[in-house]
Amino acid sequence: MTGGEIEERGGDTLARLLARRIVVDGPLSVGAFMAEALGHPRFGYYTRQDPFGAGGDFTTAPEISQMFGELVGLWCVDTWARLGGPTPFHLVELGPGRGTLMRDALRAAAVVPAFVEGAIVHLVETSPTLRARQRETLGDSVAVHWHDRLEEVPEGPTLLIANEFFDALPIRQVQKTSHGWFERLIDLDPAEGPAATQEAPRFRFVLEAFGSSGSRLVPGPLRDTAPEGSVVEVSPASLSVAGAIGARLAAHPGAALIVDYGYAHGPAVGDTLQALRRHAYAPALDDPGEADLTAHVDFAALAAAARAAGADAFGTVDQGEWLERLGIRQRAAMLSAKATPAQAADIRSALGRLIGPEQMGTLFKALALTTPGVFSGGTAPAGFEPAQAQTE
Ligand code: SAH
Image (cartoon, rainbow, N blue to C red; front, side, top):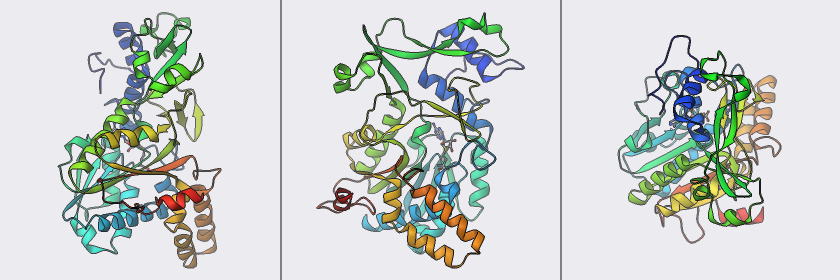
């Protein structure tokens, strides 16, 4: 994380720290603000706390139901088998949260002992709080290697999963004006007085003064066609991770499953930066470090970055559709058969949340990346079969 140059003082908050940084360096890019708000080593949102679950700020698919992780685990087993069952291999998760997805995936994958025995588990996680939580969830029976970055995971055959990871990576925003594209930056709000000494600095969006970097960030076709006033988002950090995954899959047998919320045929025009606090939307620039900050994922851009690095890409398929193809209804029925009436009601409600079109079913999408040529001639990783996708 950047920003280490600004000395911390007693009584600091992240807002005060960022305010002093803006006084010294000028306005921050949206990406720099987001990176600090989420990952600052002392005040970052993910650094300080475990934000998941009913008592937290938001919940995610694996926290809603064990069915999600189980199906992801079975997808990994099936994909690994279709890769020829390379052993040993790296089983990598990016941004594992509480570790629930990996725990459920490994439990389900135990139906194929060679998979679990051959897996070397790597968790890419920057938050020490969440690393401790992952340790607790996974218990001592699984040997786990933690890393700050994907690049630290050793080379070799790889199965990689990332659920709601990319939406937390920093984005940059650019806006079209009558004079061209300008990057949107975050500045102190002058209405609040000499902010560096303020108890609670306030922030606002401004446009960069000279518009030098703005237009370079805008994807080609949009540069001319977007109407004045449009905001376009790009996530260089996400593209760099997608490229690294693609390069890894091009060099060794493997596959990656990326599930997140966002747009399939982006880049879309619009400001999608959003803050979530206690299950409700909050103003994005208020109280940095106190709320989760995310942005829509541009799946087409991720797929393109991975393809450019040599991988094949499949999807996207809507999460609801993908889970149905993998048999989530059958899994729910099996679990319900052994459940009390109250548990059966919970299973039904969880199923609705995961696949319902009004809930996570269509906003969330799955993208698969694989070693080139492994799936060809109309074959695809489970749930990504193109023929089925066309009938939707
Ligand atoms: N996959 C989990 C958690 C999603 S929240 C789930 O589905 O429940 C995002 C996760 O990514 C958190 O674990 C957060 O600490 C981690 N994270 C955010 N930015 C990161 C980064 N730059 N590098 C590594 N991990 C990051």
